[in-house]
Amino acid sequence: MKVFIAILCLTAAVTVSAHHEEGHTGHDHHIIHDGHDYTVKTKEDLARFRDECGKQLDVPADKMEKYKAWEYPNDEITRCYMKCVFEKFGFFDETHGFNPYLVHHQLAGGHEPVDHSDEIHQKIDLCADKNSQKSDACTWAYRGGMCFLANHLKLVQDSIHSH
Picture 1 (cartoon, one colour):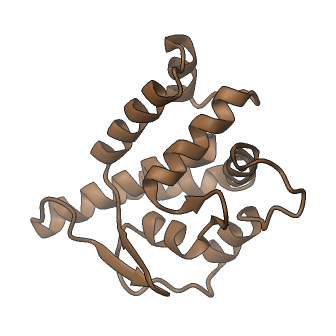
Picture 2 (cartoon, rainbow, N blue to C red):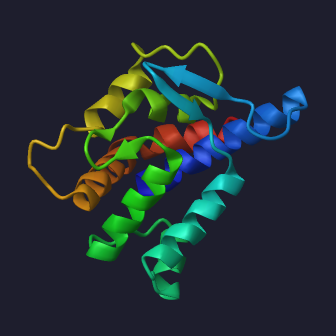
């Protein structure tokens, strides 16, 4: 979940910064990648997704507070919450898992072109496994999210602070 929140925070920071600098409002970072129609999400989207997933999964208030503090215990509610938020972002589905290209576009804030051969993409790709363990979708999403946070949190934090 930390990965997800980090990705979302980074995306929100990049998107808000880009909108402010360019004078844009709304969702104008629209991407089509390999047939996937994607719009980079904002921090307002993140807040809405958190609320929707929290309500959908009946997440207790104390857990929601932990999530906001970057604490994501490995339990069923947290794993499914993470999956829900990733799905709402549009870069995870329970059949195919993560789409590293869309995650990368989200991290980049929709600024074209995104170099999918760069180090950031390779790091995203490593955590976006193909579920060879045959885990349920919630566990799969949680594993990917936690992998990114555990291995690349500084990258995400540096990216957030640089915008």
